[in-house]
Length: 241
Image (tube, rainbow, N blue to C red; front, side):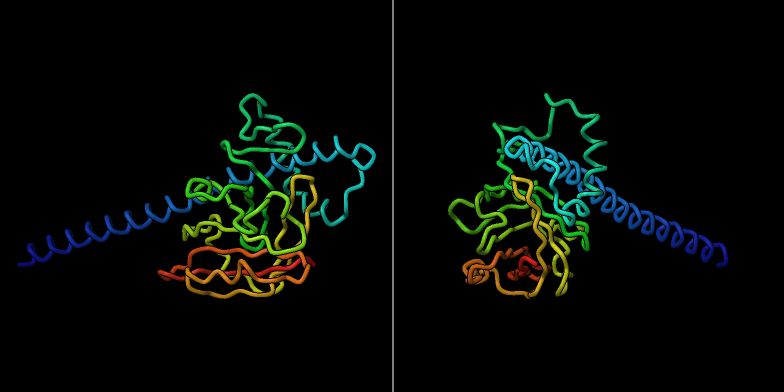
């Protein structure tokens, strides 16, 4: 009887160990994939940053050293990444391809800016084209529907969509943004503007009033992603400071 009881305990212990190992492996894999995605996105943003700065110097040679103090501070960590990435990158195999002075593409899609949200560790390129494929690789501009490339950091409401992978990447954590949280948007000319969150709410996925709202001439951005609840979306409003 004691032997059978001991065997049962042994089996239960083995099953428990297997379950614990499986759980640890699952969470370890999620952490690994999240880190790899973030590292790749940081490299993308860093090289876009380099391209936009070089373009800005070409177009404005007399102002190449006149950076705003705020932008210089915000670019510190990006500058370090840029130096490390640029020194080891062969232009012929660049993850970005520069066309002319300003146009930059990533995986064949036009990049119109970058977004950085330090409080939730977000840093990605913004793509002009809104498709299921572009949403898999970056943040996409959705509104205004016409000439989105020239709407970045301009008066009006620039609407950006990103996936919620529930793992901290892309827009998974924008629901955590509170009033006053800072968002930085950089356009192809190298201009970086600071926006502050002033509204965060959840709505149905059929509600598009956030996209057509009137900013009364102010420069604003709206972030949108799927909620963890089916049929819902998380919406964040921010305006230029």
